[in-house]
Amino acid sequence: MFTPASKLLTISILTSAILFTGCGGGDSSDTTAPKFSTATLNTSVVEGTQNVLTLKAEDSSDVTYAISGGADAGLFTIDAKTGALSLKTPLDFNQNKSADGDRTFEVIITATDTAGNSASQTVLVKLTTSDTQAPFINTPATVEVAKSTKEVIKIEAQDQNEPLSYTILEEGDGALFTIDNEGNLAFKKIPTYIKGGDNTYKVTIEVSDAVENSTKHTITVTVTDPKVVLTTGIPGEPGVARDWIRTPEAGDRAVVTLKGNTIMWEDNIDTQSGGDAGNYIYRHKTFAAAKQHCDELVLGGYDDWRLPTPNELQQLVNHSYVGNPDKYMDDAFHFLNLTFYWSSVELNNGTARVLNLVLGTDDEMDKNEDDGNNVRCVRGELSKGDFVADNTNHTVTDLSTGLIWDNSADIGAKTYNHAEAIAACEAKGMRLPTINELITLADYENEKIRIPNPAGADALYFWASTPALYEDKKYRYFSFDKAVNEFGSKTNDDFHEMYIRCVKSK
Image (cartoon, rainbow, N blue to C red; front, side, top):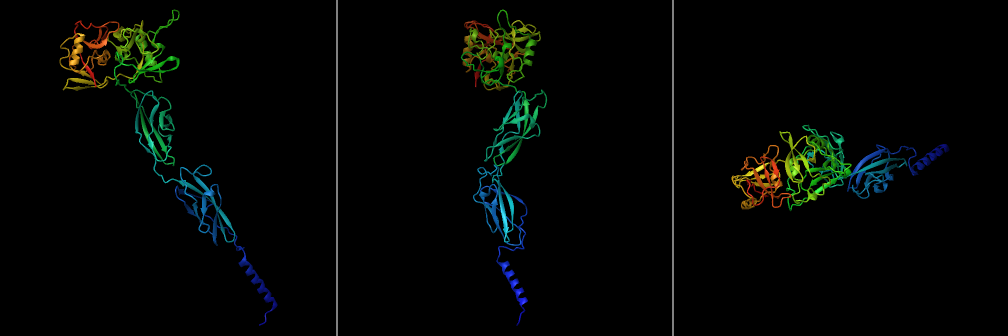
């Protein structure tokens, strides 16, 4: 069959075109790049695992995948055919961080089709923890704080991923509080206390662990006016150690506290008189001036100072140093006036109770008298306490001191000299009380004994085992119906309408 030359030429050209197209690196007519769903893909991986995700780029031809960049590219690998992205080695939440310091890792994946067209997608992989347990907080939901105190409580929390962090949320009264890295919660400044008011504050704390789990805890803080209870011993007796603690302030002012007794005493220049002949400092005060001084005193960060009770003042008398004027009070007290100090007890006849620190005795003083009368303020309160009766052995226990007192029916039925008093108490398996122990039973305001319905209530004077200052072989005694600690007393051999109320310690 004959074919024209022009036809042969056309077939040859078409054949060459077909052969050329089939032998090249791609279809020159395909100019569309693979398409990822987004330019940036966010995902996460749990610590200890390797598989991240499988990427998919849409295209009309086969696509291959490769890691082409990213700050953390070296940590990843990808299957070129399937697009399965994984970590080369598992990561640890506490040990591994990304290049920019957080726990979100960046890798760039490029997808290329058979025509050589390509597209890239940034993948951000957030490392998460297998720990989903929030910190456990075992701090109470209600806390009481004494007025004039900033410290509140230490937040106690537990978690397997420490360190923990503490944050005060803005809700409630959060702006009034502060918290440190150890969880110590405190007021920013001493809170206002209103007598008879609500005095409660609410603060919410958020505690977070090292893997970003967190929990919240709300605390109701109540500011109180606490009563301080004397619970350890009676100071000031011969042979009894007196351990005073001085906390100084500017100008040599200080707060002085007896160890084991949380009652605080003022010590500053206003508590003494002194000076040279030309510059004598008169600081004696009337009762009203003494009371005003304590009401206005701010010392040690406290503003709730007051006049002491006679019972409290007696704790300052140092019976351990009979006749030694340098030791009437401990060296922790720098300012001292060896005359009278006002107590808080006012009497109906226009007088008030005072303590003669030189003699260690009680007295009455006209409230307008300022010659020789001084002031030493105190804070806290010597609790009146409660008594528990034991009808089996006829005793009562004072819960404020722990002392056990005889309350037998024979109290007040017989008088004793001092030697007989000692022997009688020993026969009861008890002892003769010290003067300061007797004084803890005194109700100065009502001039009676604090023990309810006591045996021997009509008895006048009771022996103490404490020697009288300046008086050789003489001993102190106390009268409850007069509410007075008499100076001196009769000698061991004298007989003077004296009674006993024996005591023992737990």
